[in-house]
Length: 89
Image (tube, rainbow, N blue to C red):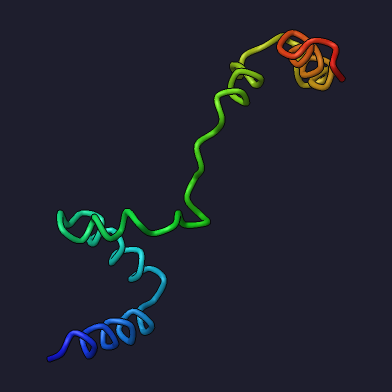
């Protein structure tokens, strides 16, 4: 077999896989020492969770809060933004 044939053969194989099978194949590739190097060069998948920016976590803070948090959430968010960014808005 030539490398070109192997390459085309793999493309046809992947095209016939179900989405679930493709996810399993990707998992296998990322766990292989040699193949994982090629997988690192792939762009991130759109459904992968992106890390939350530190600034957003600082703005949101903890889930616990005042007892009236649900009723006055807009006011509380404005207060947190003023604390962090001042009255720039």
